[in-house]
Amino acid sequence: MKRVTGIEGIFFKSEDPEKLKKWYNRHLDIKSDEHGGIFQWRDFDNPNQEAYTAWGPFSQDTKYFHPSEKPFMFNYRVENLVKLLEKLKEEGVEIVGEIEEYDYGKFGWIMDPEGNKIELWEPKGNQ
Image 1 (cartoon, one colour):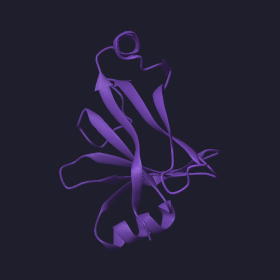
Image 2: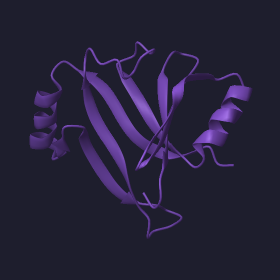
Image 3: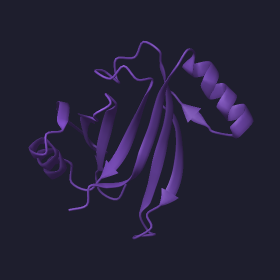
């Protein structure tokens, strides 16, 4: 079973997320909506499959990264979230919360040994 298949997102805390999104848009041409920006790409093994990597500043007081106290969180794309979380639990990895499922995929969270919260995403369909 493959574990991580790619970086799906980079999220970080910001003093003023809206101002920062405007700066990145103006100077680096990263266009954003209320959630942040996306970089579209094609899957290497399946070039017909479209995918993307998310980029997003969060407010300093966000609880989304909790229980991590770090100002960032990475989101990794995975092939089978349920099986991977079962395997990681067997290996002693701390699982955070419950799996959440949406029309675009499933999310789960773990903690690394340095207290970084990691988001895992299994896309639904051809995303």
